[in-house]
Amino acid sequence: MSHTVRISIGLVILTALSMLFLFGVVHTAAGAPRSGPRAVSEGHRLAQAWCQPCHAVEPHGAGFFDNAPSFQAVADRHGTTVLSLKVFWRTSHQNMPNLVISLEQADALAAYILSLRGD
Image 1 (cartoon, rainbow, N blue to C red):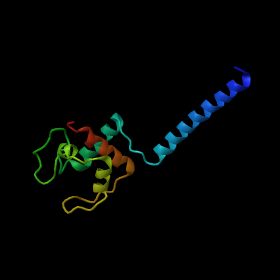
Image 2 (image 1 turned 45 degrees about the vertical axis):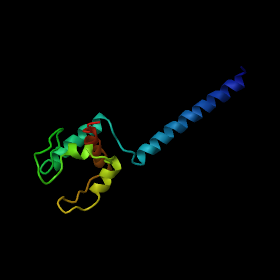
Image 3 (image 1 turned 45 degrees about the horizontal axis):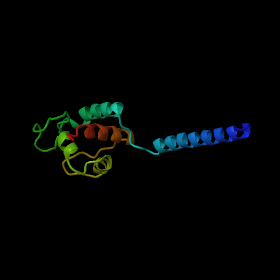
Image 4 (image 1 turned 180 degrees about the horizontal axis):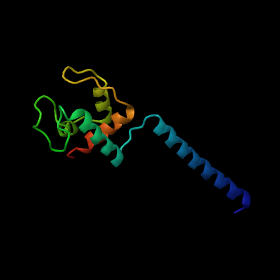
């Protein structure tokens, strides 16, 4: 293989890797949902601080509160997704306070709730 061909292949590979990296940065910056153990842990902390007065936030905590569903019940509902949770939190509800939470907090709360799924 000639020196010119090796340089061209190297440039193609470098360009492709750069584009993948750039796409990943743009995708994350655009508000891609964060998940993983850190998000679940942060979501659990937020749920305990904000939601526990009305909801059972711990796994299998159903039955403690009559007026608000447990987070386990919410997680196990068919159709519960990150998007459906975010839409719910942005909509006024009669028996629930209007929440003003950041996108990162919404992602963390959703990650925690969905981690309770009993798949």
